[in-house]
Image 1 (cartoon, rainbow, N blue to C red):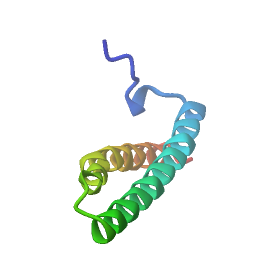
Image 2: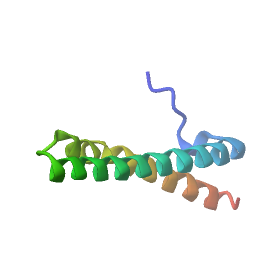
Image 3: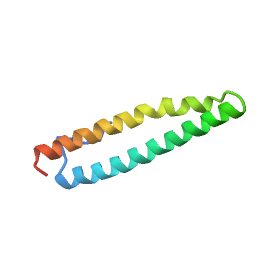
Length: 82
């Protein structure tokens, strides 16, 4: 059921489009996770411990996977001299 194309089977336009989307999404997710960590830390310090602090750590592998995908796309673009 995995209908994602591998990077070597994508066209140049698809690669550039996917790279742009992945960079934007990764940046937004990273910023939101940092804000969520700050809010969770603030709530834990001012009131009591909150499980909200654990959520950014639980979602951080998503950012790591996205960054790996961006790296793969960049490498494929480099091999194609784009």
